Length: 291
Image (cartoon, rainbow, N blue to C red; front, side, top):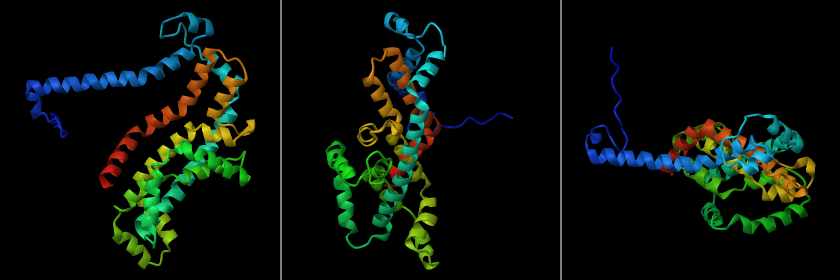
């Protein structure tokens, strides 16, 4: 039995492709997208391939591809930097940041979007206003308060900083406002407290926005450098990003070694994007439509 050909349902339909002008425009769009992909992916590929080269080949050869694909230089750099411990530190920082980003920002969004106590409108406006304040302006008072509270050389300030993110609060508010009010009212009739309603009703219904905030928090926490560098002064707690910076400043580092260390820092975000790229884009679109 012959399979029926699926019809296009996007902006350009199969019927539109009968026009020569539409075909030309369609081809131009594909070419432009291909060029943008090349410009976006080429630096990553170049860094990875440069990591396979030794110093002599890196400095003298103009070829993109290395002469050999040996993982021995990567293993040597991994051992030299002792990145296993730094990976564990980054994992601890990321895990705590994700939990705080979901719980604290979610609770504030839940209060402003669903509970709406007195003064919630003012708080909501303050949250929106805080988006206008650059993050670099608040780094000095934030660091001073961390030192006064004696929380230096600890992961706790890093976790809490992601538990007070205005962008995540806005995303939660937009999504919570689209939830069916009947289910929330039913939970209240059944005797659920506001916290029980949040954890047992609201969060399970909010998997799309939870996934989006989780991915954003993981990427931001892993890539963060300035605050971990200021807070985690001890070498035992340094994250991967801080370790790479310290390694580049404490001794003369060859360019090939630095390239390999950059590759190690790129691996988790790339894996995260490959695994959740489709879910991330779909959830972003759904959040934007519902908002």
